[in-house]
Length: 184
Ligand code: HQG
Image (cartoon, rainbow, N blue to C red; front, side):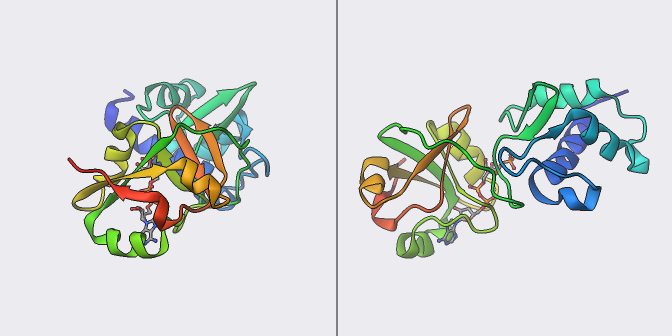
């Protein structure tokens, strides 16, 4: 039986392979879009003793049920849409809404207001069109703080924004003067 716990656990393994350490699983991701054939991912997962029974439909179920739409399947290939720490996936530059949101925690605020938003261990800073995604992200590490990013201001300072789909935008960095704390 493929229950919710197993689905979550398989999703974590998939993010590990598709975002962070494909080499550890013998998977080579496309250097442009970070994708690999669905078959390749399936074989890499099945090579793990614990997951030897997995079928393509289980992977498809994880993709379908991910509230944050972490993955994308197209033309027999699969990729993580965002969140990479491994090679830098390329995205087309886009025209973002005037305001984007970033969820963080109270302790990180002084440093962010001094040096701006940095990708830290990922390849890009993660931003969203609405506050829901930002709330999910920022609630993971202590007291939630939501930052509003003035994208027009950031663009004037030379920042490019990239669209990763499903309301998620990425940037190489965001200057501190483009960020303000959203009052509750
Ligand atoms: C913070 C998860 C100090 C930043 C999430 C964040 C999201 C700084 C942390 C997605 C800083 C990095 C991405 C600075 C940024 N000084 N702290 N200058 N600049 N930070 O996880 O955006 O469930 O790498 O505020 O929910 O939190 O995995 O990025 O707190 O959607 O699909 O440094 O990943 O989605 O943390 O999360 P992360 P994120 P999944």
